[in-house]
Image 1 (cartoon, rainbow, N blue to C red):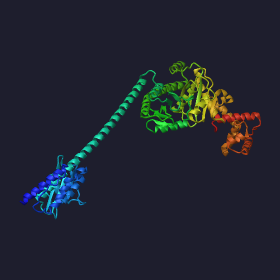
Image 2: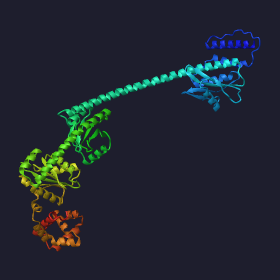
Image 3: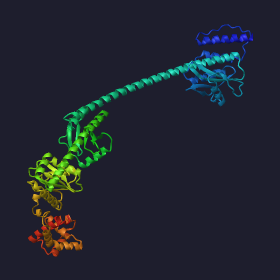
Length: 593
């Protein structure tokens, strides 16, 4: 009978809990109790009423909080104590400590051994212990480890089962909510990723379309008969909308397409130009220099030119850079081809000029000159160019050739060890070539000698000697830099190669022998002092300044010269012979220059 009453009471409470869970209104049926309720049952009743009457387990989305609430309810349900709980996270059971106490290692091992089944657990000081699996539709959500001071009654077991079921249901809801949140977050991420991919695809398609347009236009330029530098600048201007230009490596404009072309185009500064080219060469890709975006054209490392865009508003983007790079790639083989043609032409010129300077037959010379586009039937002038601290290599020869073309000289060119030789079909201007080379080289320390006119091919070797003599006279003159024409040498025309050195040496010895011997014995510079005195026209101040000595020292030296040589500088004839002797000594016999 006692068992029947207990079961009736339990079923009554279960029905009441079910009604509360369904949200039905509370009822207060009249229950006739034949005897007082055992006090031990009151906490269990309260725990069940609290659990089923509130939605705390289902209101929280956090699995750990659900497990904590469940352990609180179990502790309130009679003799039970919730030792610990476990949640399944990533396929592993992760402990949820109770009141800050972590479970004993033995408990954790036992729970894992059960592998999702319910089973007994041994906890010191607790005669009864059980690991209860929280199994939902999605699998094992975790475990509750429950102990008791005594073996629970059937009603207490049923109450514990109900708590476990509610906890499992709440965890299933929480897990489902979490999965939905994760799915929603993943869906949002996938949508964002899809949008980004679509945008990237659109950008790539636009980039490919622009690249195809660039390739097509550059291929059209390469295939057209009118291709070249102007065609490339036109195409680049069409692609970018910016003024496009090509300069040679020295900074001279070769082609411009678009508005705003400077007129006249600014003259480049050679020193700054070289610094700029070296700075740009150290960087990869186009480089901004002031209001221009430029790239070097150098197919095999050698800089052949500069391709640029005028971008004063800094509007260039990656498409502009792409177009500029492709245009430079298209321009490189063309400039290389032009360079190769120029080198071939220069080699043919050199071979022809070398033969003309050495002497060659007319028929061959005329035929070869026609092949290179030069008319040898006209009178020609031999021009010799030497620049201080500049080796007469291919680079300097090219510079001389470009400067000659810039001033309108039609010429053939070759080079020697220390100078460049031009065979020009007109008499050069007195200063034009020198000034052009001074701009190109950035220095005025150069000397140019020009021969008399050569009316026949046989005159060219002798004209070469005349040009060298004119250059030597200029180099040994007071103003050693500039241009000297052989026709203007006057007396100095006899003081050069081709004359009888024996007679000249005798003449010098007659007039300067005693001074030369004195200088040799005493390590003085009497002959040089006399030569400077004549070069300065007998002016004491200029002579002293040129020798870097005091005026009184000059007077002393000139008096010593009179005493040693026995010649009177005031006598016109003595003065003329002494002046000629000093020039022969300096120019022909190699005295100090």
